[in-house]
Structures are given as structure tokens and as C-alpha cells.
Length: 394
Ligand code: JHZ
Image 1 (cartoon, rainbow, N blue to C red):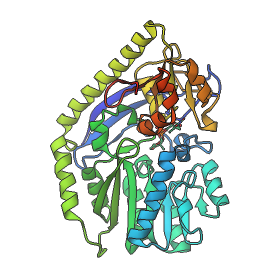
Image 2 (image 1 turned 120 degrees about the horizontal axis):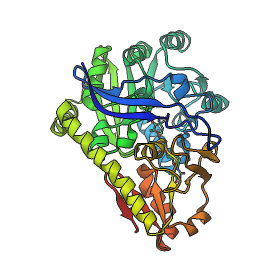
Image 3 (image 1 turned 30 degrees about the horizontal axis):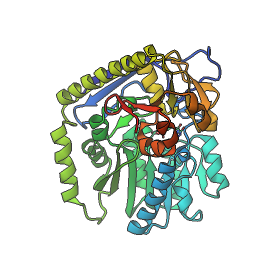
Image 4 (image 1 turned 135 degrees about the vertical axis):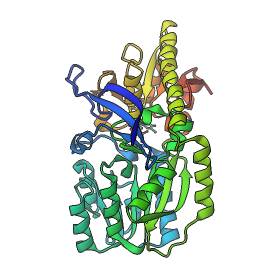
């Protein structure tokens, strides 16, 4: 049975940037629910995937050095641990992960054609399509089964998880591995990261819920790690239920205890966490208003999907945040939907006239503080809202 956890009314899609400030916007409700049976937390209101992941999708994972290094390390680690030959990536974005694999034995699936074109040009056969039963059948017939299926920040975007996972199972070798990275729901709760709730993020996986879903679909979880990107990311290791791969019971039991102690499988405890998040939303707006009343200026740093969510969930606009800077060319000279904050090209020089930067990319705090040492030493301050509102001035 589905039970409502938290609801947001009239929220635009986080990456649906506006070309013009006064452009019309499509609004959607965002209701997050808890499933008593699987313990999965997910979005109830399904938006058409083609609208969420269009052919000019703007999120490019290669914009951050942290992510570039992360996926290089991850690729090397998986190659060493599993020595895969046939490899498939589901959701390859700009090729940040597969670029470390041999193009002769590696294929990808990527529905956003602007990114599929990039990896096809890099000689990785990339199917410009959503992961589906039809495509999985075709891949199995054409390329055979896989030693490694990797997917980062994509399985949590897919509607119809049973079909998705069954298709993964069909494409895996008997001892093939399925490695999934997704923001950890446990860490989302610990960090009060309410801005991770948006339509693209269809599911919020705890280990407990993901394991339930795998088991429902002929797969088993054999290991899990927590990696420090995107505010805390789970790396799940799964294989076919009939595989001879050993299960790391000690590690899995440890995480299960930790998740249960925190209450990720308890509706009532989750409801309490949502109240803390709502209080944080009020604190954010009040802090920004106070700073503005002292005649200081504030800009945004990183027009992430999270920044757009915060701006809309906390009812911010360009009277509070004059503009937001971002390094992604496809985001620049556009406006955030609803909050209508201009997105400007990243330019270090602009920081000379800025008092406060509101961190839209709080998950890259270390990388950004390192990059902007001069801003801080000249008296500039960052504002983060995760896990609570805080001013960073050193
Ligand atoms: P970033 C995306 O979320 C979308 P977002 C997606 N739905 C998903 O699942 C998660 O990732 C995991 C910019 N930036 O990575 C680049 C700078 O300008 O936190 C990005 O636009 N300067 C697929 O959008 C944004 O900030 C910098 O120095 O929340 C960061 O977005 C750095 C480091 C980043 O993901």
C-alpha cells in the first residue's frame, strides 16, 4: 500500500530551463510516497520520460572534476575486481564512465540524443533509446549477454522498475554483475536533502528497498558500498539469483541494521524526518531575506537540478538571488523555471562584486571552496543549506 510522505504543489520539471524570462511553464504536482510492501520511496505522479529526458537534456556529468575522477576510479576498480569483457552501460550521459573501457566490447544506452551522439562519435555503440524490453531483447541477440552492466544515476530515474530489472537479468551472464550507483536514501535523510526530491528522481533507494526489488525480479544483492559523491551514493552489486557469486552477508547485515535504526523502513519515522526538512525550507528563505535586508548581494553557484528545486520549494526569486552562475554551456543565458532566476556563464571575475554565493552544487563543496579560495579570502561567503543553513567563510 502507498502512503503519502511529502507533497509539493505546482512544481516545474527541474531541468526544464526557460529560453525567455516570461515563457510559459508546465507545472506538475510532486507527491512522494512510501510503499509498505517493498519499503520503496518514490514519486507517485509519473511524468512522460520523453519530457524529462529530451534530446537537448542539459545535465552533463563531466562538468565537475570530482565526478570525472570518481568515474575514472570506479571504472578502474570494477575492471580490477570483475575483469569484465562484454560491458553495457545504461544511461551513459557524456561518456564519463565508458571512456575508460574498450569500445570493441562496450556498448551503451542513452535516450538523450545530444549525449548518445557524443559516445557514438567516441566509437562506443550507443543506442539512442530508453531501456526497454524491446531493446534488451535486441541487445541480447546482437551483442550476447554481459559480464558487467553498469548504471549510475539512471535506474532511480526509470518508471516501471520490475520490467527494468527483469530486462537487466535477461542481459546478464550467469556470473555477470550489475553495478548500480544512486543517491543513498539513508544519506538523503541524514543530510535533510529535500532538494533531491524531483520528478527525474523517480525512486529513492535504501538498501532494504533495492534488495526487495532485485529479489522480486530474479536478481540478488551480493555487496554494497557507500561512495561520497552526490551527497552520499550507494554502489549496489547484484547478480542473477542462480549465480555462484558469494554474498557479503556481513556487510549487507551491517547496512540493514544501520538503515533500520535510522528508520528508513518505518513510515512514522520517515514522516518525522519530512517535518525537519520543511522547517529547513523556511530557514533558507528567512536567512536570505535577512542577508538582503543588510544590503548585501547574493548569487547562486551551480544551477543544479537541486538549486532549481530549492528555489521553487522555498519560493525564492531573483530579488533574493540576482543570478546563478554555471559552467554548463547549455544552461547559460537561460532562466530557472518558476523562480525565473537568470543563469549566467561562470566567470571568476564576477565574484569580485559578490557578497554571498548560495551553493546550488552543495555536493561539490570541497571542490568549489578550493577553486574559490580568493573569493573567500577577499571576504566572500558561501551559504549552504545542507544539512542545515550555514554560512561558510573559511
Ligand atoms: P549536480 C543531476 O542533478 C541530475 P544535479 C540527475 N537527475 C541526477 O540524478 C543527479 O545529477 C545525480 C555546475 N557546477 O552535478 C554544473 C558549476 O557551475 O550537482 C552543474 O550544472 N561549477 C541526472 O543537476 C551543477 O553545478 C562547479 O565548480 O543536481 C551541479 O549539478 C561545479 C562543481 C559544478 O547535479
